[in-house]
Length: 265
Image (tube, rainbow, N blue to C red; front, side):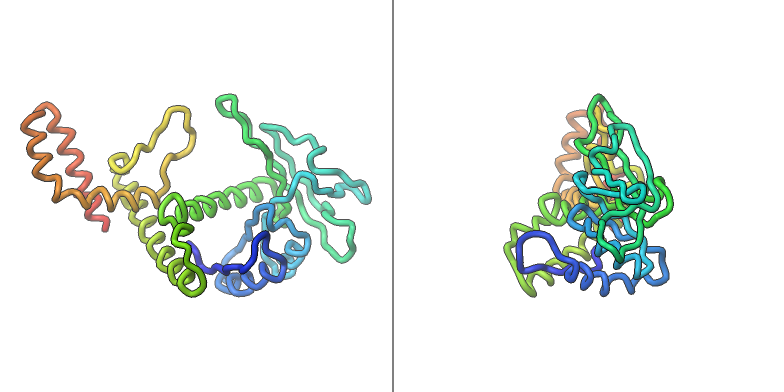
């Protein structure tokens, strides 16, 4: 769910002041919760890590493999020389990420997923964190890919936000509407999955694929599109039943799935 977003009138990465401006508005909403800030390599800033520590907020920030850390006092290693390879993981506590003074020490979690079907990810993860163990850091950082999935759904995977070419207040209003629609579609998709009829909306399995093919958002969005044809196709389905009586049970299952999906909206 998107709670806050700030459009920048420039190209390139955000800076510390811009990041802090967003966090100062968003973090107070979670005062009663354990909060973990997740950031990709755009956010691999020692200054941001130090500031989040002062806010008593947990974080997992992915850092670049050409960065240097000190595992022992004044003994510096470049991350890419630490020997991380597919199928490996390790965790260091109390490392230094900069030679500048005035910064507290952090922890480093590293993981490179093992090969599946002889294919491994191109890079491993080096994550600067103040969480206390490897499993917690990796489990938290994995959630960032749900954010990436949401951005894809906002753009080419669903609402084609980039093709609208709007800006300013119109962009903010459109993002707000999309956020509400995205939330509703995701909730509907979860309901459809609990009913066990998602296979009628999209092909959920694929040869050689180890993760789900479609998100709850996709199932909710295209499930509503699918059942919109129930009235228009009822006569056609009746004709098909007459022509293919041996397929009657399959048509009936599809009609039942449509009724269940309609009940979710």
